[in-house]
Figure 1: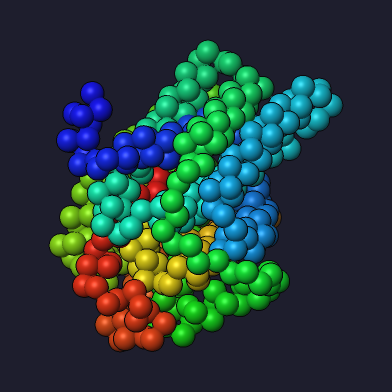
Figure 2: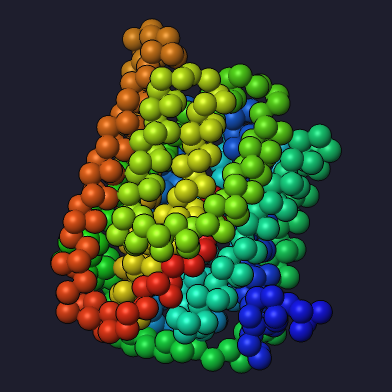
Length: 450
């Protein structure tokens, strides 16, 4: 069996066990996220009006920015094997504690479900950054091209399993307490796997920043790197607007479905996310070929154009089927092609800065965009309700905003394309561009996300 797998996936001696250990750790994170994503959203919407989830998203992103800032202080300074083990233990403890919010009858259920959602989203943004930087440190570019797509597949498999459990819960009613304990158990299993499988791992990129720096200095260093290279600067603007547009599309899909389906929302939401995960697996299989065919700089146009088409579809064709389709396609594109684009681009950043620059592009900016999109959308809804407007009318206002923001994202992508060649001449990227295949070696990165 081992020989057959080695032949199919072109594993070299010593790679099979490590790949499956890393895949199992990634599986744990996404299986847990699949469970909590559905029960937190469906539970919250069953307790309060749907527009208040926008405020939860805004608070969530503020916490995420703070958490990412703390993370950036250590990501380039400490042993990343030990760091991933600490992260696994922390999530184990949090999932073991959260059931108390449901066991105390006086604790508001709306807050309990909000806490689950906040934890789920921290996982979505926090865990993959630590994990993929560790993987980049373990494998050289040539090995990464072969092995990272295999490892990344475990994320989608985990998501499918987690969403499947949540879908069964819609009829079996396991309850939040049992599902949270289930997540704690599998995270602890991930910690055990990491302890025995990664302790002798050889780290190729061993550069670390020894001097302690403040969060402000870490933030400033990442931003200074980005703003001095035109293509990175325009990508930053694109990620900011992408966060806002994806927020508008997601809220539109959730609000329409909750209004139309009522008690059937949890089953729909679980199966809907399951379809997105399966679609993402199929799209990821084509992502590398698409990027290679179009080239990296042209591929940055895909996500903005998909978001623009989705926002226009939702605007002109009301209903939960159209809004769910628009958000689902945009989500799949973001998690596959766009994620691979960004990882390939970030591979040009020197090792000692890559963690902080990656966090800025993949976490800070989309989070800030989500905050902006959430607060503006909530303001539009509140104003519409205060003025006595019908839902159909004020929803067109925030969907129109989504179209405008998507147009800004499209413009930013065109600017990335125009300044790409000039940016490659930057002395800050020179070390990473000596080999002609350096970027293409990273095109198959995979990061299944929320």
